[in-house]
Length: 534
Ligand code: N01
Image 1 (cartoon, rainbow, N blue to C red):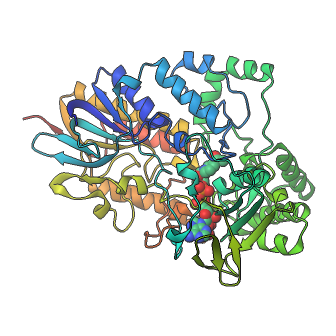
Image 2 (image 1 turned 120 degrees about the vertical axis):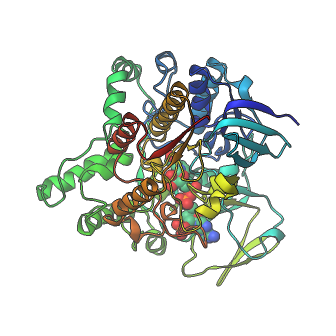
């Protein structure tokens, strides 16, 4: 059991916590990171499931704050696999000598603000009690895993894995009958790999997802050399895009484009692979007609790949606009269902009944299993924050303040919770952007804010209630003008029973968001109340 008094307490040692620690040190602040895992990496520490890899170009999904690290690290593939990204974050932590200020295997349970002394007290499951002037929640948007609530699941004798809590050292499914629940990004990556190993794989699908091919490749040396020669310019360009990634952004709507060019363009993007597919036209996520054209194109591709007519019918996404649940990027996902040892169960026509010691039972069938994989996702964006008892001014719990949905100012701060900062919080672009780029932005903003406070004798900073309300309304109005409200996605909390249906990310674009945050800072932190020591 140990405590300590710090300037900054940081929760989480993923991409965000690692950089926050470095930024705090650079400002001459004492800082500590508390991390539940045994190493740095966050998402990339926990998600070791087979096939796990990023869907953002690896040379972009990396820190830009240190020119030496940026130049030295060698990315080997277009979409880096989990182990390479984890290796990268570990390298950064070692290179910047960060580990000595990170407490691993320790979970934060509570954080309470003491208004009299303007300090946060953070408590952990190890019995630690630490105090800090500022508390930074670097807890990640997709950290709080969600298991399905199936009657009798506890009776199952085989192992049950969640993709987001995968065992260290991996799992060997050779010769086993495996069930996978979930066909989102994690399931779609894991399913082809598990199918190649297991004797039989049963995929339990509730909603068919749209997926486009990754077309991953190993980088040729000259490709990397060219990229690195122009890295600084590319980083600036990326920050000036809507999503913080150098996609090939189309400049017009579907209607404005020549009919023959439209189809050729979609074909070109399908062959190129990756998320770029969604950016051919500017109105894909606003105009239902355009969206239907893009979805039809993908459905045609699926129909060409999946051979069995019954499986094809089940796997075809039909009832929500493409892109309104996160678009999946796959390698051989649809073709996997042509394998003899793979079966697809449509839970809409035959819902789960219960589990026995050795099988999954649905309303019409029984599926013998040796192991079960839950690719069932997360209580996203707010889950990891609400899991901690965060008490602000007057002892109010954050999860109570957010009972009707999250309320933040800029996604970075919350009224009633002074000196608490959230990295990529609800109301910021977060999951609608290159996460590493957004993390860097948020941390630089927080670091600059703390430096400004200290330079100006300011001891507390707190979002103004009205400024926060205006921001919450702005975030909601951006979502209302889109098709996103039509899907039951985790963006909107629909995957967690009882969670308020509120669209959480900021859709105004990374470029606009960052300009707004800059403007707030340049105007003396407009929309915040600041307090000075008496
Ligand atoms: O989780 P998900 P994920 N019974 O929530 C189903 C990022 N990511 O871990 O759609 C039956 O997307 C659920 O069904 P439905 C990325 O941002 C990125 O796959 O809710 N089924 C769905 O099919 C991604 O979006 C990468 O009807 C149940 C699946 O489980 C986010 O993480 C890779 C169920 C969950 O899909 C989350 O992805 C991996 C139940 N009770 C993840 N509960 C890359 O960069 C849930 N489901 C490539």
